[in-house]
Image (cartoon, rainbow, N blue to C red):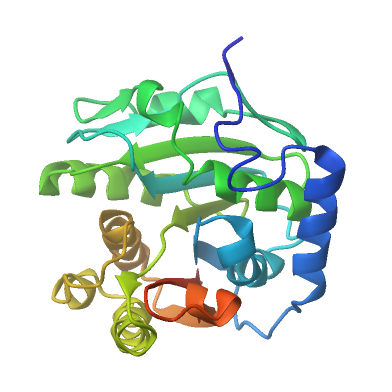
Length: 266
């Protein structure tokens, strides 16, 4: 069995289970469930070190706590390598200090095609999906994952992937999209840009979001794909759960990174 071991434990989050458990528990203690008018289908959350974006992420993941999802499609951007296909980690397990999570090999195979490949190599040192997994391990039980990374996908790749994701989404399946927002701008500038980005996402329309390419979001392409999924499935309800940037956490406001959690629901 292929085991994808933690790549950033001890860097982005504590490597010791007890310390990680305690830190996550503290983050979730600062959240609460809010009123949603439907069942979440798409969850957009950040992936920085949890001392920076963990509170925003926890607010997002709190909304799916104990909702019984059995399959999680993880979609994020590669920060390490560049490629045009979609790279699926198609078999084995992912391991974090909180335990192991099995890849849904059957569903992963259904995704494969000319532009969507079983390609684990970009995943091995990538943090963007791993950061989401530790939160999922705290709010769900007995779930499998389908990890998907993109880099610079063509429109054909993006459309093919959106179609495959749309076919797989049901009441027991959730799409988790991993993305931070603007990077290394002054606090006021970042806040203004991020609010425009959030507004475009809340429109639920891919083209509205795509008209705003200066978002600075590292998961820009992943968000576009998720909005195309929303269009295919007629998911028109998006709700901002939380926004902060790193300056709000550290007090250092000369250069900040933006974070948001947003839910799209049926």
